[in-house]
Length: 274
Ligand code: URA
Ligand code: SF4
Image (cartoon, rainbow, N blue to C red; front, side):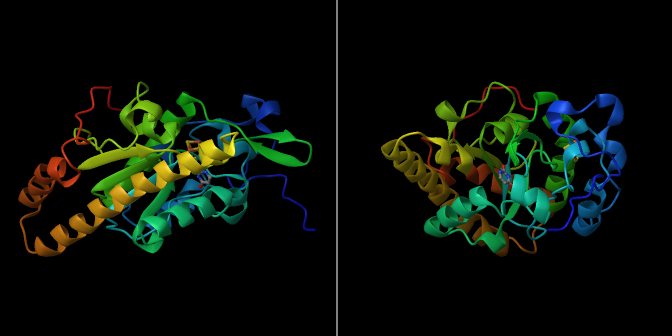
């Protein structure tokens, strides 16, 4: 088997998060590492060199988002997992497989959406020979937010789907609760015309009993079906509004949302918006 390199792609040492001495992992604001470009390919390269928080120290490489510029819908997960860290692509491991299955059942073509994470490097703890996922801190999520903002500014999605609490809290503030607010379409954020949140696929896998897992997966697919319906209408609206004046077109799209998703779900969000 090939030796794993002792240095990560940013040139820092590769030490498990539990043993990392922050002195060996100098950091600066992520914003300093983000090139002024609208090229997703250049940004993908640049994320490897980010030292905006200490997570880069132990990761193989940065994992940037994937999908078409101008995608109507953007999915935001938490952080890359073990397989994503090795592949350099988001959602290619077990969570990605579940996401693909649920998207297929809901009628969302994965190639048409943009998929990314709130945090771009893999944070892990050693457990025997395995690298176990370790939750990024609120501070690390905040440190990485400029990358997500950059992606949103370039892709310009009309609907953002947060997968799990880390993404939801990064976009919608620390008081957001998936359990209470999943499936709500939130229209008063700076991010996009609408933002919604649902379970993280990994959280579904971790539900201890079979019946609970089934129920959670069913709710997940229901949320994605709602996304699929919104996506179809938004794509139609985009095509019809092609020659429109951009500012006016954006306002019209925003106005349409509450009815688009059904009034019962177009709930103004009263939390703090990051
Ligand atoms: N979990 C995530 O949140 N993102 C990935 O890319 C993979 C697993
Ligand atoms: Fe930079 Fe985000 Fe990686 Fe931290 S996790 S080093 S902020 S890209």
